[in-house]
Image (cartoon, rainbow, N blue to C red):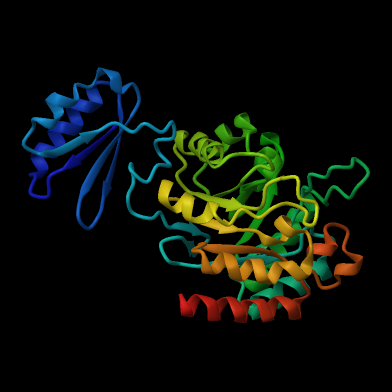
Length: 332
């Protein structure tokens, strides 16, 4: 339920309303925009008499939110959320590019790539320390050593780091990570999402391989319901009957999500297509359709990468991509 406050309402009236609603056991979120102030009510709103609330001098309107996600709902929070990721802000017109290798392999590799992507315009560094793989025999990442190398790359370049968590038991290792990524396979790992909801740290939540937009928003709701509102959504392709690409990139999800939620939405064309030559055109399309950022895999030697080499750009290709993305954004 949301309560829309009148523009000329007195602060004393608003405070008394908040106190009254709080006594009903509701959590109240106040969202102040340029043209209106909205009081979002979370909890058992069946105890609220909407007609009584609407009759108060401070109240313009009372509306029930039908969608099951409340905190993530744009009706609840009309203004775009801007998420601060270690000093780099995403959302609300602030476009960022996250780039780096699929997996951290060694010190020379991650430092080389980090320097290259920063020089080309990336503002956050990605790299996998824990790697979920379909095959148990594939490279699973360097784990703690990978995190150490990522932090070393951050020290060298000043870029905040983004890396994926696999299990809640690993959280102590992620205390000094700027942005924690929840991969597609873990999008509905609800126990993990609950633990991430207790943190005061940005969470990059990827859409699952076969999940709907509403299911993605409900996963975001799990994190936000715990008190962590620093959520960034990522469209990374869904599994369809098409086999020409690794997944099918659902770019329509970007404007749809912007209609439904105030959270930033970025696009990962690398995992979506699985083919390096397709990453550029889909990245440009993502920028054109209103994404708040991109997540691009870059490797200094893709042919010998231990993970996802076929979809990785070289530093030179990435530099060309960032120039083109900038041009597209200037046009739109």
